[in-house]
Amino acid sequence: MREQPISVFIVDDHPLFRTGLKMSLVQESQIKVIGESGDAFEAVEAIHAHPPDVLLVDMEMPILSGVSMIGLLRQSYPDMIMIVLSGHRNAAYVVGAMEAGANGYLLKNISAEHLAEVIHGFAEGRRVVSPYLINLMIQVPTDNTDPLLDGDGPECAPSLPSHLSPREHEVLELMLAGKSNKDIARILRVSVETVKTHVHNILNKLQVRNRAEAIALASGRPRCSGS
Image 1 (cartoon, helix red, strand yellow):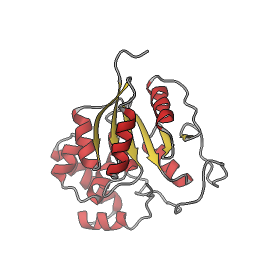
Image 2 (cartoon, helix red, strand yellow):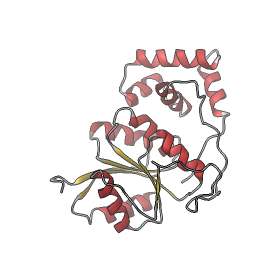
Image 3 (cartoon, rainbow, N blue to C red):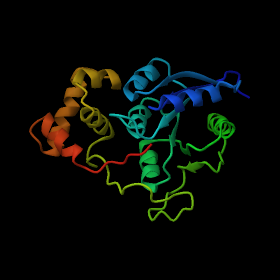
Image 4 (cartoon, rainbow, N blue to C red):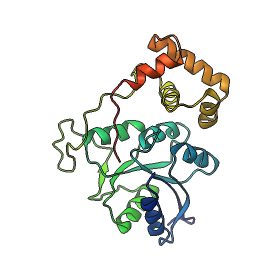
């Protein structure tokens, strides 16, 4: 058994859900909620300051989605348990979470007891089995034939050009969110000069002349969303 409680950070833009989730988890003696936020960018900075063992994140939030947030954090925190909480069972959402680096995809109708069991299982490195968990270690069928999945969402193409590097994807996501080079540098914990280099490479790969054209090109692509 762990000597220290499992630290958890909650990110969801619905205050009522976030508060209820926190109140449920604080009843668990071996789980400690160390932070919560309704803003993904605020959450990223808080997590950099105090990384949790487990991140619980909503699928879709204003400006930056939970999946994009996981993509931003995964490179810096390869061992952090990142679990998406969503009301959608559409295969496209699950695939998006899997590709971003999520450890699990939980449906929001999960009970507090089951959620605590899932958190303990992941944190202890055990194989997690739950009727509310879509296991991201298995291949998700593209035809939605899995009984746990349905077609309640749009078909999604890759959200950003596939020939960009993972870091360039992250920078472009933040550009789409309206962040300046200085903001991006702070969020990714790199220098402004490094960000400028990434932006330069993005412009070259997208074959556009400036930042505005890159944003216009990327924002015109279909993107997965859900909550």
